[in-house]
Length: 118
Length: 106
Image (cartoon, rainbow over all chains, first blue to last red; front, side, top):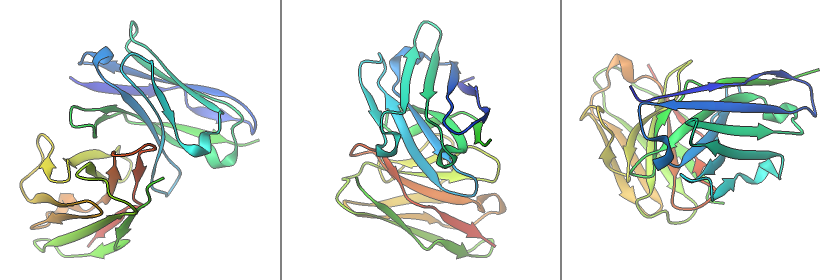
């Protein structure tokens, strides 16, 4: 079964850091580009970051402003998002998603919640 | 950054009726547009890519059309399981951007 499973979310203090992980299974992870997308409570979907299949190219939303770093370990079939300088505006469910053959996001994980609070 | 604008924000329909959702891009995205469905507490699901191609397993009652800056998602006969929020997304330019969503409610 093709699957993405996120982990690493939780409660973090303002200004703190967190690393999210996304474990892939059921497909050749190293052949696909990947995205992170987030959704604040009660809000819409917001693109965060993307990485190509070998990790050589990365893309970030403007609001990331150097605070987040996307990476991947193809030997572990895992995608990462290192987040720093977190603020209340970063509180959201973070989804990883696969960029499919049509360039749309064809497989999504279940999401992991990031809560920023003191 | 390309701004995606969806309308209406909320669409009230009855089961069996036709629903038409619109998505407009602030500049041309060609046919590089996708539609996603999201139900409460669930991850989004890909419905349509390339503006009009249904994803695997998506029922034929879902159809997409348009190109350039104007796009439409049509649900020909709403089923109870179709009540959800629908998002469009362009993948022609970086950063990829989503519309704000249309909620289809009873």
